[in-house]
Amino acid sequence: MNKEFHYYITYLIAARAGLSPGEAFKVAYSSQYVDDNDIVFKIRNPQGEAYTNYISQTLNILKPKMELFRIYPIFHFIPGEPNAVAGRRRDGKLHYLNTTPDSHNARAILTQALDSGNLYQIGIAIHGFADTWAHQNFTGYYDAFNAMKGPRNRAAPRIGHAGAGHRPDRVDHFWRDHRLLDGQVSIDNTIRFMKAAERIFEELWKRWQPLQRQERFEIEKERLIDDLLHTIAAGGSKVKRIQLYQVMAQKEAYGKTPLPKYDADYWMDEAVREDVRGFRVRSQVAAFRMIKSKVTSIMTPLQDLYTWKDEHHYQLTDWYRFQEAVKEHQKMAGEILYASTFNKMELKNW
Image 1: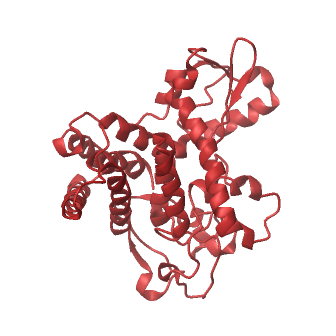
Image 2 (image 1 turned 180 degrees about the vertical axis):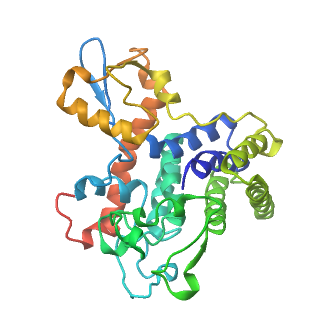
Image 3 (image 1 turned 45 degrees about the vertical axis):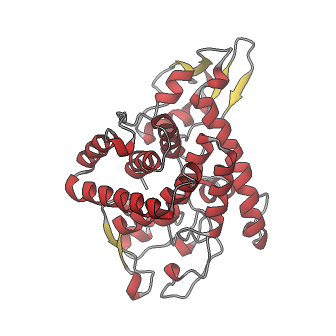
């Protein structure tokens, strides 16, 4: 999924489930920022000590297998049930790491995040949970299992859904996965994504509205999905749909508060002072970020310098709290996945 779902739709789901606008924003921003948190920074204090973050996405899908393995199955391609009906293929292949929607692993990870009460960790877990619908039938590992048919698709790296391009992540997209059985080849992302929205809404509603009757939940869920489907159908372009989501956010049922346009730099800019050397590593163009990272790893004088804007209270900033939640999520999700899945495989150095 892309930011249309991870940020805008996730905000609307959370707000309708009973979270305050501020809570819904932190959850939604955390959910999308998982995809934008792809650079390791060293933030220095006046004493020269450095705080280092963990990344939850990678700029380079050709990195060594184990380096990617610490990112993709944990944050984007949560291993599910190999025998799931939705994953039945023409070649009959199964894979322990295959992503399947609403899997036991994904639910366990989301449950632990909800139990923590940490809004940043909840948003991170929702990202992976939602992606079990968008990324189903792909693995977060190099494997021929991910290969797609067609000359162009076959040339793509066999990691995640690289062979399918951005098709699995687009809200309104129809596409075909010829690896699957005939009855499952045609895929309507809107149907998949609305199922994800229903389940996320259900999990948040249970936590924020525990005393509400089941009848109320069913009514609110139906209205949420109706509103989203109407917006997706009426929007036409992604830009127009996003504008309509922002209009929805100002309705009473969704918190009656303006939803700002997503800005991947917002949280970090609030927390960190940046001294750019050469060109900015945090460019919105991924290729520029990769080039700058490569160059500065060799030429130290070109490395950007980062310091805390408030060295005494940086631990209260959203960026710092998100980064700490990433570290906690990786530890927690890794333990869950090792117990259920990774221990059945010969994975070195896990």
